[in-house]
Image (cartoon, rainbow, N blue to C red; front, side, top):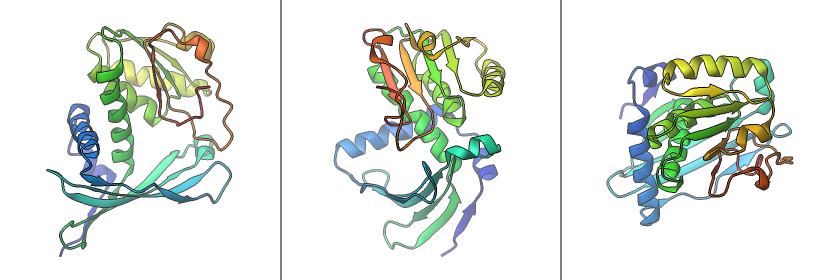
Length: 236
């Protein structure tokens, strides 16, 4: 059998939309709810402090019948070096024979699948008529999450953003306001002002072994949707 090697550039050339990704992710949630999958807890190694490299195997049955494993790393120090925080590769196997079918870049899939998961959650769990989103952490996940939330929330109008790096804020606002010109962007002076009154708060900060959990519950409006892309690193 031919083993395909698929690059980030080749995946990008397919121009897959966030709506398409959300449709697939929602189907994955449905199959998991129906028990038509096998997804053991990820295992990993930690070569440096607060850094991880995880093995993430999964089989999805039903109308998908796909098997594979993602080998993905998360290195917070990379941000200061101008390198991606998250990188990885994915191996896809034939479910019938177990023979590998493809080795492919996992960065695009990780970025958009994660953003799409937030979008699917917001579609069902955010308050109807949600207009304001707060995004904390403006890297790749901050971008894909906003694209998915824009897809999920038809009445979205306002975006408040915050990041520890000022240059990241400028870059993010320039890029995202160009992609989503119907939204207004604001960069409050602190995190408390960023999240106060927001209908949806999504945190995309580095995952830390000992997080300080800097967003207080009392800062959030009643019935706000809190999406913790970074597990327990941000919300108290």
